[in-house]
Image (tube, rainbow, N blue to C red; front, side, top):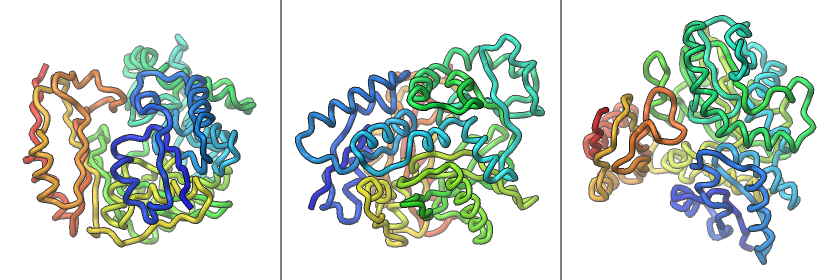
Length: 427
């Protein structure tokens, strides 16, 4: 039997990694909706995406066995709506929004794991007196209630700084705010959530001290399982993400506490029959755990490093859950005992004058088998015009690479940097 699996925003990475699933002969992968509409557009018309997707599915002459996706919003919200219409397994839209709407998520987290949640509050950036509404202490982070990749996220140290970033937030928040508002209309929202629209922000206390990691897991029929634990390596006082490393180097007892917290909060939310990931910080000095955020999807960023270590991308979990079977994810059967996704970043604006050639990229692949390099820029682009970058750096490309140990990993990353030549003209 071959299952027809529709992949929302089927991109080059998916086309490269999905054929590496175990039992790949059991699946027939089909794209659903153009990639630009669900991943790279400046704004989304969510209702139109729903209509377009339903029309594509209705035009298909075969059986739709699964609808899956690894992109953030709006894909994460599309999936439960499309699946419900066809009677396919997956979490409810309400459970998804309890993960994706950052303020609603914090309310749910505070019920299940209150000792892991920092002080937080909703902030309306369009309120002329927004600065006066702040009740939590400075410093704090402010970010839209829905965004990703730290888009419009700012570290705020005083009232003047908050005042200075509000115009930038107001200008850009509609990219995610408008479609989130459309999604929220599909639900009868609780009284404490309905007023916090997609055009609002959450301010929350600083929790960036310590060791950041992400638990990748899944739920099936109420049973929560762990896929793996990934470390995030950050740099500087603005906490810019440099790379992901798998498996985590956290002590086993800390990892077990993280798993216990994750089970409590996922149960509270009522999330079921799908993958998820939850980001935590471990304050090593005080041996305290903080919950950063919950994502109602697996991380596309982690797929290739699971393949390098375990022998298949964790898309395996996503696809099998989408069909409704027990995930057939291998463990420890990959080429390397350790792998990373390295972000190749710069911290100043400029014009891209040169990107790595195909010959350079191929030399990297030959030197380090299994390596994947993905380019995020093209010649002539101004870095500050890239979509969905964090507020303090620009991502030129990403490198998925394996190694025997962490020293070897860092050495390989530096060799790849030398082999992949960018030329950025400063402004």
